[in-house]
Amino acid sequence: MIQALIRRLRPWFSGLFALALGLAIALQACNATVEQSGDEFSDRMAQEHQGDKPVATEVALAPPTQAVVSKSVDYATVDGSMVTGFLAQPASAVERGESLPGIIAIHEWWGLNDNIKAVAERLAGEGYSVLAVDFYGGAVAEKPDQAKQLMQGVMGQPAPAKENLLQAYDYLVDQLGATAVGSIGWCFGGAWSLNTGIFIPDELDALVIYYGQLESDPRVLSPLITPIAGFFGGLDKGIPVEDVKAFEATLNELGQSPEIYIYDDADHAFANPSGQRYNAAAATDAWEKTTAFLAKHLKS
Image (cartoon, rainbow, N blue to C red; front, side, top):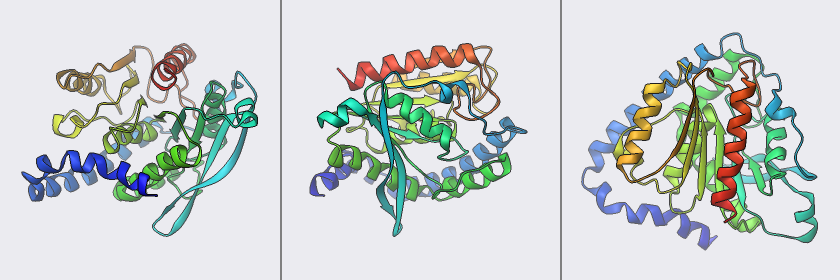
């Protein structure tokens, strides 16, 4: 418990002086921006997913490369309520009691459905302990309007989601002995994968963003020291290419070297575990690049 508390406070102490320079003004501006951008983002996602359905895509249907074991686990307590996620691990590693690198997997706007769980198992087959978190309290959406409502609930009150992720990290490290930890998310989850790197920059070893909401303000991105890989569609109107390039440019100016990939013929959600926007060529290439990126930064 003490070690977990120290991990959480370390980034706060390192940035205390800078924050103190303009705390009151910064907090007012930040709160307004979060609320406005959250509403705007959910509206754009609703437009991108208009008529969509959470059907399983090839990303979710492909089997793991090795046998895995999986189960539901209680990994956090947020606002007095237990949070249950989905844990997947290689069967051979569990039998040996082996500690593995960990991955926090963050669901799309549909929620922690069976397709996200299947992708967690597929990632586990690559040699990881994968914890698929739940931001919706067990709810899953079957229609875009349901997904939008659930997403807005999180975006309008982001503090519980942040605490959710911090405890997910602690679970992987303290309970499973993870040797390194990365994050990955799709769409809504892609935005929160980026946020994870901002929340715990000293602890997170790799983060993957699939067409999530981005940020180009250097004041927001300056804490990031985590290696980043991002995958985006050239036809995506929800996460337009100009936003991707602005994000990449800011990171480069800050001394980061992000791996950013834009697939010209792909739309938003082209590699989602659920949905009807799947692009096989782009999704297959992105998966290969994702697994190589994670192996480089979590297994080295």
